[in-house]
Length: 322
Image (cartoon, rainbow, N blue to C red):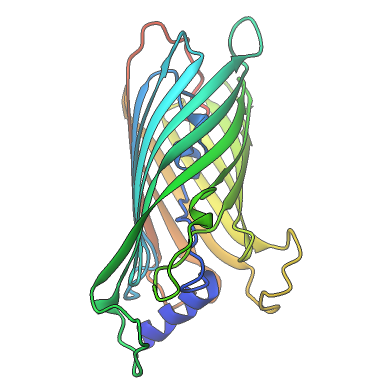
């Protein structure tokens, strides 16, 4: 019973149930650029495959579970990036399955091609669903489903991404079409809302073999609290990444409809990335709740995998972002 009550608090506090659905979050966001920004497509200038699995708030029934996979590559003499993304997100009775094809046009800003400005567009579809069998109210509503109820809606996403040998920054937005789809009033399916992402980072050499990489991710759905991730990694010989993050809510724009005494601190994150082989990366992150769920949840576990295929024509890149 305690787990159910906690989950209800989470759902009603983070998601406007039956009205809005938030995007999934990843603690290793800096390695999952395609999920955040379609303009990231082709960034590595190699055929690149990424996979993520995240189980959040372990020990709480119905807590979020998210999977994401992407593949991207370059075309047209490095001027175009192409990517395919699929993700699946479950929270309680809710299920979202997303597919996107992504295109990025990459402008060369200097002679050695170390500076690029990319403009990206993603087109796809989202299956929004809810499993009525997981809802057990004492007084069911008239239209409450008894099984799985879903709809498929078209969607679009867009972004811009800049990178050079030391800096990167990206601005993007998703759910640009799904928000306008009119879900029937009798449906229990939550409506998607646009999300805006601002991400940036830099590389600071501390010595020949030690690099410092701070970054941040700002996310806002224009409905709930604005989320900010502050992250720092230490990179050892380009093969071992050791990092930590702090996730918190911040006041960015006026949202008078939000509860005023919400806890801002969300979680602390410890993460490690290993270049296990020349072309293979594996990562793990652990989130410890420091907000309202502190002491109730077993924490959050996130695993990431990455593999890229050699491209003899690609220029050598520093191990800055993966």
